Picture: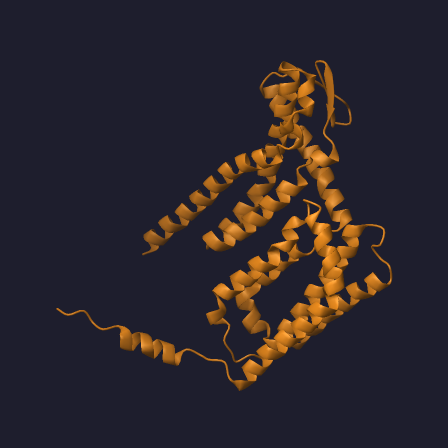
Length: 311
């Protein structure tokens, strides 16, 4: 029997797909013009922002996030066809947020810390962009790209107070994990009452704030959100993947501290200056990806099995 020709069906589906009207094209062109003018207005600040984030590993992801969001939006652009209708409330809300951040910049707020100034610059710009998007396309359309738009929050540098608080929590949690691991391998140590100082045979070490693993933990958190969006379908599994990053980051950092402590104890105090201490972050980050990817595989497999059972 000759196979049925599916071309007429495909042509029919293509002909019934919605296409943007003249008004929609005008809205799209208006949004592009608005975004271009806005970008040019912020360009001097963006140059300084780029220099700042490029020189600090804690913020280098900021440069990549907008391109990821644009790519994700392009992947579903066929679902974003008109008709489009403006949404007044989110337009006004984001415009006011952008104006407030801009007012704080001109008022000198955040001038005491570079990251806070750049936080306000990025917050103002992306707030105005979102205001323009809600005015041009509306809530119904933008709901279809909710994740890529929400993902843009990582294009805003973390303010200093939030970074400091997170580093403190990771610092103490990592020290607890290291103490448990040292005890598990019978590594002799005495822990000070502050919980951060460890006295090893011949060498005291301190879990400093810089050793909290904030940078790699933030990157892993971002990767977990992106991985959940791309590879998982169930919201519950996406939440599990993201939440699992927190203990994984703490265990990874505790393992790094324990490794350095063991090297200093059994090989000599000079190991505190070994590259594994000062430049070993990427190695331990790569190791943490093994259980992370295993969890992604397990959650994805469970979704496939559930889908097969339901069919």
